[in-house]
Length: 53
Image 1 (cartoon, rainbow, N blue to C red):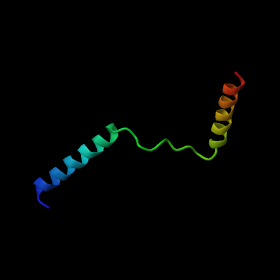
Image 2 (image 1 turned 90 degrees about the vertical axis):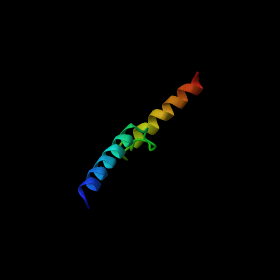
Image 3 (image 1 turned 60 degrees about the vertical axis):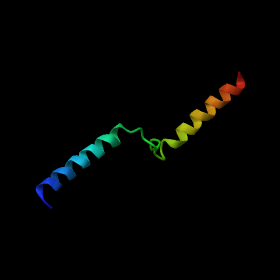
Image 4 (image 1 turned 90 degrees about the horizontal axis):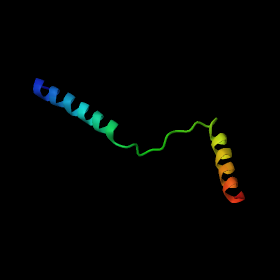
């Protein structure tokens, strides 16, 4: 590879990484198995409060 191609390749990769950081994440945040039961209990309590009112 010549010098110009290497420089262009590095600049493109930096621009691609910067755009990836600015883009909104398409995946939801990972929830560990240890925390999943807590979330289920919280959501059930929220729903039960909604129906009790």
